[in-house]
Image 1 (cartoon, rainbow, N blue to C red):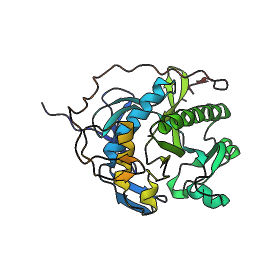
Image 2: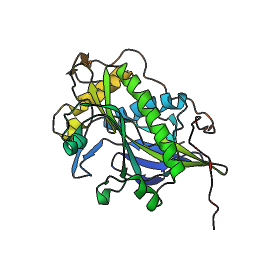
Image 3: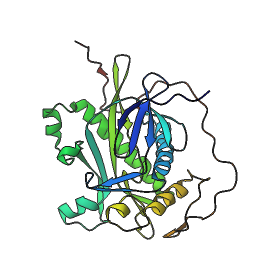
Image 4: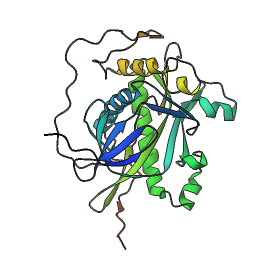
Length: 294
């Protein structure tokens, strides 16, 4: 029996979303397309969709295990994962540990200069406007989110940054900064804020701790070359793509092998029933009743 075609829901710059097999779920399909500078620069990175899917699956699973509620449910195949359907809050939450990119340019800082403690910024998620920076007062004035929701987002974003900084450093990678997105998910009448979108070299700046070689989308943005190899190197260090053929490239003291890994390819996890999301304990977060339909 042939598999019925998936019903498309939405196509973005990096992913396609399809209707999921269970109510309240979506299938996220990761593409090889690459964009930068608010879609002004476009290209393709071979295998990026597979790499980002597996990296994001690995990191979201770790965060779930650490008590961070996310939209991730399970991996489906090399390019797809099953996620909960959430109402995306139109904010990009940026956590900066070191000066880099536009931040370094705006403030005349040296790239790689430590900021002492994590610095959080918000951008309005709107490509037409160029994803402008937005103050907290603007968020409330335009009704994008409520103060208690921003408190939750701050809490989770800082925890995610702390967890991932340690995880990446253990693999010889420095987390320079990262961009997160959050969504609203309802269980009954209770609203829960969950981490959404993806975590990958597309959404993080990742540098080799020894050489400061860039292992992220800056290689595409700045025409540095070796973008595909850099993404593969992150996947190799995290151990998420043991069965892929990869190109021989050195980054610092890391090396990507030309030969496929021995042994069988990883199996797709068995289907498991949906589990209710439990928000981690936090001092400021409050459950918000689901608004009644008029």
